[in-house]
Length: 106
Length: 136
Image (cartoon, rainbow over the protein chains, first blue to last red):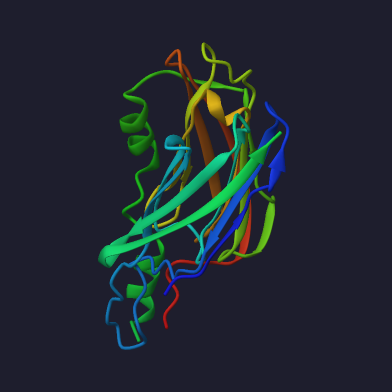
């Protein structure tokens, strides 16, 4: 089971630009590698990520095999209101993982 | 174990057609130099984990914002690295991730503004230990 780490400030001023960092454990097997016997290793990567802020999508990412194992993503958003951020990763072999974070905007 | 010649062919990565893929993403639009800043170390010891960041000069208002940021590589097996889709709610056009680099190569970041114009930055990265095609 994947382990995800989210870094979102717990509190922010209204209108403040906050940095969001998201990390998830995943091999990101790129599909180009072979074993020493020459057997190709099938691709197994995270292909998509979305972040919603109180239901509104604020960032969407498409990932390719060139992204390092345990993908790290960082982006920014404006703290508009208190609420919930939902993070969702999707990938090969039916991979799907969601995390939530709360933010209080004063 | 592959014979050395076959391995050399593999590592040459004939699949990568970066200019063509960039043209497909932009729809053949003119790409201007500037406004985009690609932050990647010029010399990388380990190609498996390379910190990469892109910032774009933009006020990020409802009428003038960055809508897309794409990163491409010249010599990885696939040219596409990552694509971010943003909006005015981002506040700033600044993204970061960690990538793999298979060779000493150019890395290209392009950004699309909401008016449809494209901007780019290219950085040449020297890689000591390559990623992507090693054997297990």
